[in-house]
Length: 290
Ligand code: NAP
Image 1: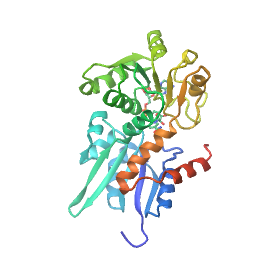
Image 2: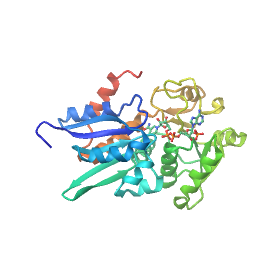
Image 3: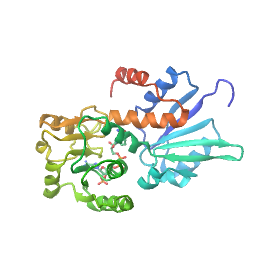
Image 4: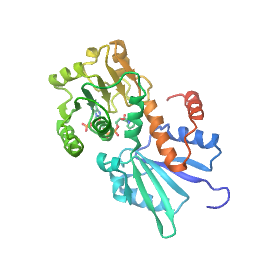
């Protein structure tokens, strides 16, 4: 690195719309006076290999990975954590440079970030849980729940039931008690599961800005007191789904805390220093969602 140059961290995704990650990380780098810079890096899937090779020639130290590269990036890893191997997706890269090249490590901090927010919520999760969606975030949540929570059963419900079944099958090695099940999101039987669930997680993008009128679930009026309804979406802070759940008496949680927790875990891996939470909180509260 030359004098004045900064260590580079990027968010690899495509297409990259508005992201809070640069704001979170750069606020902490500045507050701690660390010579790091976090930038967006919009890369089409066919150019991912070339981009990772290019980054390794720069003062690159790591990355966050988002849709659609979270699984594809596994092909470029030299080392992957147990969580990455279980979930089949990475959201964090760490590039450890060495005299004979370097090692690219993959981690998935979505799992730890999600579990952290649940553990710090006053409502403890014990009974049945329902996850809406069967993509990368649903997989991280499902693994977290079966691996590290006392959830009795975990149902993954998707509009494409086959995709939910594949998710369940891919985690079967970690599901010794067969707590994980797949269902159709529009089936009346799934409605019954939702009524009994202690935790319902929206892991679909339905309701995310700019599609704020969308609902991932058609029976929102069934939510009730004693349930925790969690939306992984953080923009808007309260989705239509969460608003309906709150109005039906359920407790609610949006995705911003998880975003910050997964960021904090990644930050520690890149810098060996805990993220500056007051600086992050100040930056987030000064930020207007689009
Ligand atoms: P993904 O891999 O694209 O998966 C999305 C899933 O949602 C798929 O199963 C998809 O079903 C389903 N889906 C999409 N639109 C739907 C609709 N209108 N109704 C019902 N199901 C629908 O995306 P992802 O990476 O899992 O991300 C999902 C959400 O989690 C995003 O909003 C993302 O921002 C959020 N997230 C938040 C955090 C955080 O830190 N807070 C972290 C990760 C992700 P099909 O297969 O049928 O299309």
